[in-house]
Structure formats: structure tokens, C-alpha cells
Image (cartoon, rainbow, N blue to C red; front, top):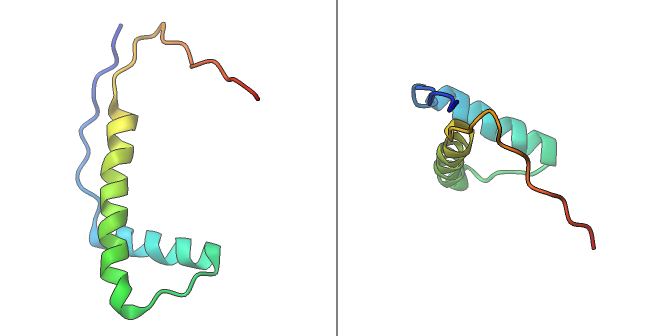
Length: 70
């Protein structure tokens, strides 16, 4: 059985801004005002890529990939 793809609206500007602020605080990373718009644009792309992975339909029998250790 393949699970259906979930339909979700785009992430709001408020959420992306809060994500930017939270990550900056978590990493203790000062963000210049002029860089903020570019960082938010990159976070939007990252969110779209995360959706591609999260929404990818997997069969019930899908197994996780093996873990190889050096």
C-alpha cells in the first residue's frame, strides 16, 4: 500500500521569520539586517525540499537503509 501525498499550504512569512529568529538564537548567530531577506529565502527553499522528502510516498513494506560504520 502506498500512502497518499499530503497537501499543505505554503509556509507563512510569519512562520519563516520565527524560524529564522529561533535558529539564530539557538546558534547564537547574529544576523545583519541586510542578510535577513536572503536567509529567509533560503529557509523557504529548505522547507520546500523538506516537504519533498516528507511527502514522498512509501509502501508499508519499505525498509530503512542499512547503516554502515567505518
